Image 1 (cartoon, rainbow, N blue to C red):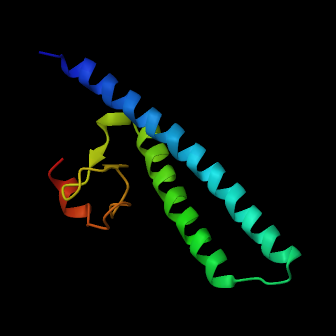
Image 2: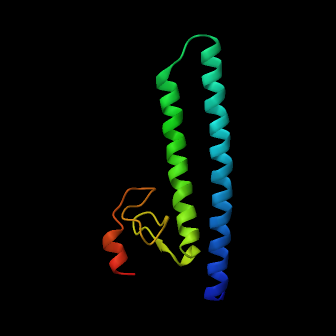
Image 3: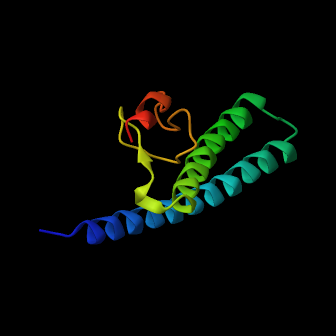
Length: 110
């Protein structure tokens, strides 16, 4: 059976890997958004709905990235988890960044 320390280190490695994937995804999304805007601009046909959808998707990835970074800064896997979806959460978070569930009631049980 793995020790609690080994499990925590494994969870922290998973968080670091998730952060790296989110950083890469966000960078790719920035390039995609810039490319879409450029293509629309040179054709003099801006489609704000497409740009807004892409920006909203980037915001969701950015929020998840900030949440993971907050968990890592707060002590890694020792930070809390959402009781509804098991997503990592920073100790100061009031709501889950993934599902929106309240974390305030859950934090009193920590």
